[in-house]
Image (cartoon, rainbow, N blue to C red; front, top):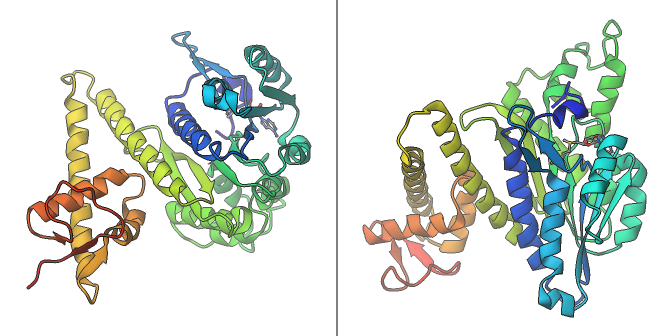
Length: 393
Ligand SMILES: C[S@@+](CC[C@H](N)C(=O)[O-])C[C@H]1O[C@@H](n2cnc3c(N)ncnc32)[C@H](O)[C@@H]1O
């Protein structure tokens, strides 16, 4: 949202906001139930470092919608009230940071009934060290949702991401400002002295990536999408680092066929996180598809867009089945374990098909005798170590 002031942002409810909120809040509940289950996990934390005012108001309809801190607080309340958590003295706590004094005051007012929430006024960078010290080695889920990239410099982000405790994070990464800054550089990558503000803009982007290497990508002549892919990889390499096994980005768009408005970057370092985020994103894709089709065809019959979505997903499952047959055919044994097969196909279908769709697609091929499984029949669930093979020739 470069160019928007924070005040303008909260004057409207933006249609693509629900994607971020939907993914974040669904993830938060599943994450909390998982990481909060070991006996030693007494306190787990959510850090909403660019928390906002806690609520949006749609200026056209006057309707209000809960922002990320309020949604997180409601989930934390539900978690903290579970009898098992109460009995074990466990708690999900929420720390919010907000720079704008008006937003911060509004947020404090909205969250005043929740005694497990702290709202800190000021800059993310000002509070990062104290938060890291406070949460120690407890598990934490971090949301970095600034406007632009200036406030999420690599040095501050690394304090949270590289702390001595397991961290999951969502980062809202917007490249519009990087594209704009590209036009303010000379061919050697130095800021153009004839463009006012270019040196500061280039420095801000250097600080976001923690390196000047983004400049070379910006001047490489790659397409915009290729540049964005290269910048995301640079961000993973330079800021997120090797310790996180799970690094994904979802291009959040206004409509199903639209251009990415921002990337919702998700990072975690436990293997279940990949399938979890994959499944949430596949649900979001379906919802975005249905909403987009309904908006494009306002007079269409009820349920028509849902049916179109069902056909879209069936096509994807068929494509996955075709890719599975091709991949198994490249193996010397003409066979693969189901788990390996899914992991090999996942990058191509990431965020498009849910984990359950993989077994449905493979079972459909077993039924048609295009693939063979070890167990008899279609009923037993496919387990990761079950071998799937091509029929004997
Ligand atoms: C995109 S909004 C947050 C929306 C919120 N996460 C939600 O989904 O409801 C970004 C907020 O970050 C605040 N902000 C901007 N820079 C900041 C910084 N350096 N430290 C803390 N807050 C900042 C802005 O005032 C604004 O309220």
